[in-house]
Length: 311
Image (cartoon, rainbow, N blue to C red; front, side, top):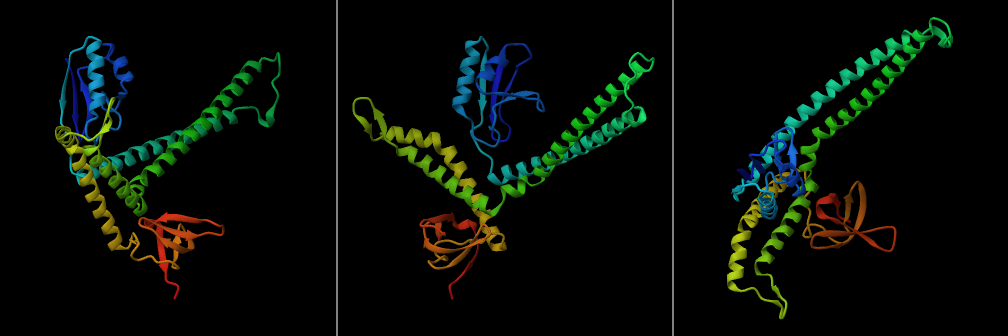
């Protein structure tokens, strides 16, 4: 018996598989991946999200067609966004420690490989003495050159590996800061708002009929959609509330500027991405600024770093 499970915290996983039982081919074709760290199959990007029911249904049907018995245990509730973000920050901190430790190990391996290469080179005859073909030293000389060449190649590879892991460690330390960048937070709120409005429109969206074309949804259809989409709508609203609170705290602390249409006027000078520009028009969500050409540029209000009135 195979069991497909889903929780908001763990994501979508499957229990009961074993190596060589034939499930791997089916799961791969359905978009699943094997997680070495958890020793289990999982659906990518399913953690901290509501279940992808179409993927679960497709996987269940494919496994049953292959002769397996499958049951599902699906939890469609979602955790609070604050808890989700706290978990992400904690996992990222653990990843930073792991990547930093790996980078340190690779640096040690790089040093050791260089020392071996240097020692191999030192064993070669001084002054780059050529190989004496036919002499009793020929074999020993050729072996020494081959060992030195191999040691130098490993040293170069170790250096490249260490450089790569150092870069990954440095990037990992900035991931959480980048996620909470004020402009990123403002853009995320806009994106979540658009996704919420799209979900709400789907409840009352028209249906397509082959003979009558697009027709209004019936009351039963609207009710069924509202029930099915309710968890997703609740999740989006909770996410928006969380990030709006983050945004408000950033504005209050001065980390974000918080300009909008009510505070930006035509003729103002605004600093955007390090450059001062003249405001041509204050739109609902963006500000239009003059350029050295015949057109204007637009930027979200969140990108305004500073504002100066003409007077």
